Image 1 (cartoon, rainbow, N blue to C red):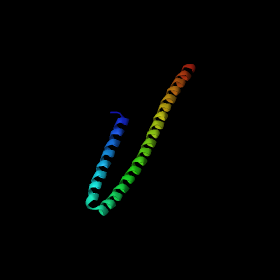
Image 2: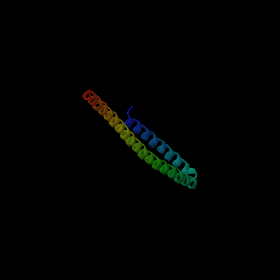
Image 3: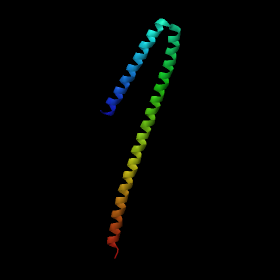
Image 4: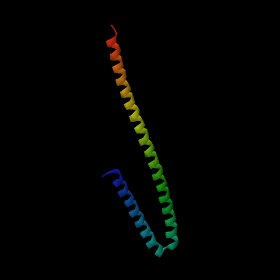
Amino acid sequence: MNRKTTRTAREQARLDRRAQVDNLLARYARTAPAEAELLRSLVGAEIAEGDRYRRESGGQQAAVRREQQRVAAAEQAIVEAEKRAAVAEAALTERQP
């Protein structure tokens, strides 16, 4: 499974859970409307906070991936510079009597 498919599956599972919570809250509202409304507002606040943290986490993960790419590019540049230095040193050694 690729990253997009996994993400889509997680999002769908999250939507399914939220639909189940809404269904249960609607059932509860038939017997205790005031309590159900309070519970709905509390659940809504928790969902909103979870969504916010999920977005922040996604941004942090993207930043980490960018830094990893920068480090990999820097390491590659170092390897290439070391190779050029070795070639230059070999050329100098051959020229010296």
